[in-house]
Image (tube, rainbow, N blue to C red; front, side, top):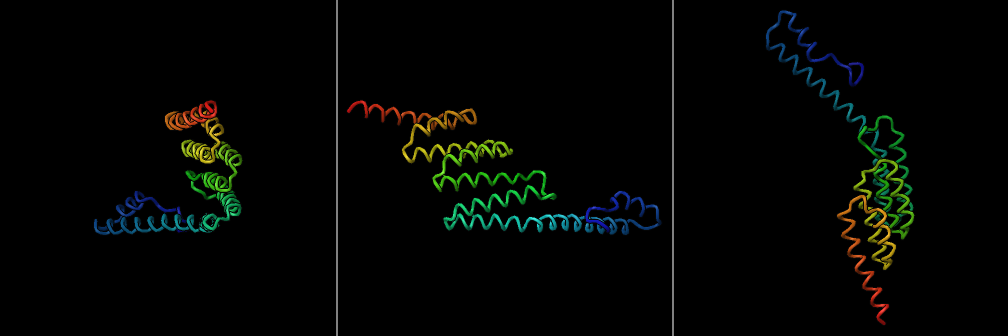
Length: 191
C-alpha cells in the first residue's frame, strides 16, 4: 500500500475475486486478509498520530511534575507551551481542545493566591471554547477560595455575576455565603 489510508475497498476485492473462477474458501481468505491489512493500516495511522503527540504529552507530564513540586509558575508556563504545541499540530483530532489545560492553570493560579489572574484565565478558557460546565466549576472554586480567606463579599459578588451558568449550584453557595455575611453584619452591628 502506498499510503496508510489508501486501499482497495473490500467490495472491490470481492468483485475482483468473484469474477475469477475461485472457490468461496479463497474469497473468505481474501476478505480476512484485506480486513487484517486494513486493520493494520488503521492501527499504524493511529500509532503515528499518537507518536506525534508523545512529545506534547511529555509537556503535560512535566507540568504535572512541576506542580507536584510546588513550582506553579513553571508548571503554568509548561501547560501554556503544551496548549500552543497542540494548537499548532495539524494532525490533532478534531474533538481535542488543548485549551482545556487552561483549567489546570486556573487551579495553579489559585494555589499561588492569584485569584484575579485565575478569573482572567477562566474568561480566556470561555473565549476558546472550553466546556462551560467545567468553567463554572472553576468560578465556584475561585469563590470558595475567597470564602476560605474570609472575603465573603468577593465570593458572593463573583457567584452572583456568574449565576446564570448553573443557577442551582451557584444559588446553594450564594445562599450559604449570604447567610454568613448577614450573621457577620448582625454581630458587628450588635456590639
